[in-house]
Amino acid sequence: MRLYYRGPDALITAGQFVWLGETPKVYAIADLRDARLTRRSPKTIWLPAAVVAALVLIPGFLLLNSWVSRVSLAGAALLVVSLVLVWSRVGRRYELEPAR
Picture 1 (tube, rainbow, N blue to C red):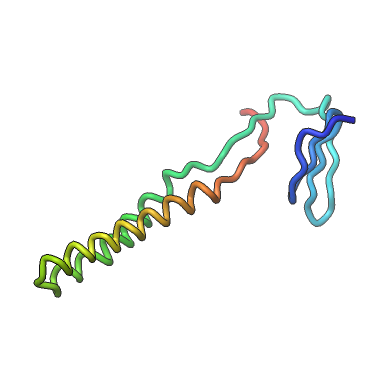
Picture 2 (spheres, helix red, strand yellow; picture 1 turned 120 degrees about the vertical axis):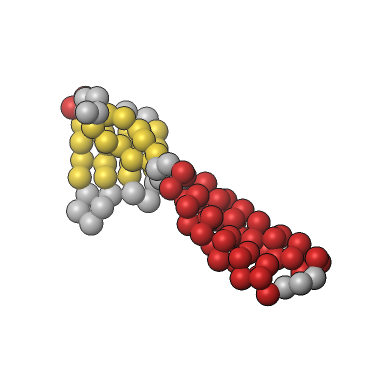
């Protein structure tokens, strides 16, 4: 039997789709109709990243007078946003759901 995917949550072979939850569920591939593979959109992470960057930048720009400290603060905010965006890509999930 050919194995297509083995992960912590599912097992997909040529004939079966096995969901490895608390109670495993077994589905025959032949019985699956109009199933699609979707993934969570990383667009939802932009708003929290922008809020975090604003919470770092706004008070810092008001309190700091030095050009060097403001550039350092902007770099820190850019680092926070970059880490959030990288985390959103690493945390991408795939879901098998029926077509509508």
